[in-house]
Length: 297
Image (cartoon, rainbow, N blue to C red; front, side, top):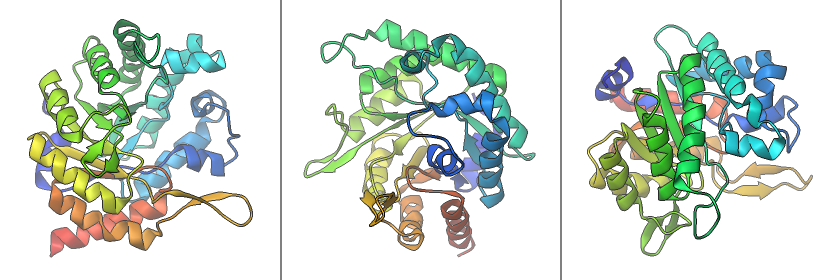
C-alpha cells in the first residue's frame, strides 16, 4: 500500500520523533507506572509532548502505546483496558498532528519469551499484537511500527498479527548490539537476516532502534541497506546511560555529538531518521537542521 508518507521518503529524508517515556517522566510520570495509563489520566500532557516534537520539526510522531499489548499491560492488571488505551493513544497523537504530518502506532515487545526460552507461543503473541493494532488503527494512525524487537521470531509473529487485522503499512525495527562479527540481537539474529526475513514477510520498512549510539548506527544502516531494497529507519540512542554525581541518569552523547552522525546515517541509506532513548525535542530540532543543510548542499 502506497501512502503519501512513502511518496515523501522518495523525495527527502523523513524525520521521526525522539523518546516519549522520558519526556513523560520529566512531566511527572513515576517509574513503574505504565505510560499508556496517562492516555486516559493525563491526555493533555501526552498531547503536549507530541506537539513539542511536531514543533521541533518531526514529520512523524509515535503513539504513547509502546507497552500497549494486552500481554504487557497484564503485568499491571490493565489487559482489559488495552483496546481503549491504545485507541486513545492514537487519537491524542492525531489531534496533535498539524496538516501534512503523520502518526505511527507504536508497538513494543511483549516482554515474553517464546519457547523454548520461555512459555509464550507464536499464536499468543500474534493475537496480542493484533488486538493492539485494531485499536491503533481505529484511533487513526497512518502506519504501524513494531519496534525495539530483540527476537526475530517475535517480530515476525507481531507482523503476522498486525497483517491479520489491518492493511496499513507496517515498519519493523530490531534492537541490535555491535559485536566483532557485526550487528546482532541478543537472541543472535543478524541485521542482514532480520531485514531479509521481514521484507519477505511483508514489512513496508525495516530498521534499527535503541542500544546503538548515533555513530554505531551508521554501520548498522549500511548492513540493512545492503540486505533489502525497503526503506530503512534508524533511531539511535543518545549514547549510553551514565549516572550523574547527584544519582540521576543521563546519556553519554551530547546533542552536537549525536547529530554529527545524522548525515552519515542518511548517506548510508536511512530514509527515515529519528531518536530513541535519551533524545528529546531539542535533538529532533537539531536533526531537522542537519538534514535540511544536507539536502541544500
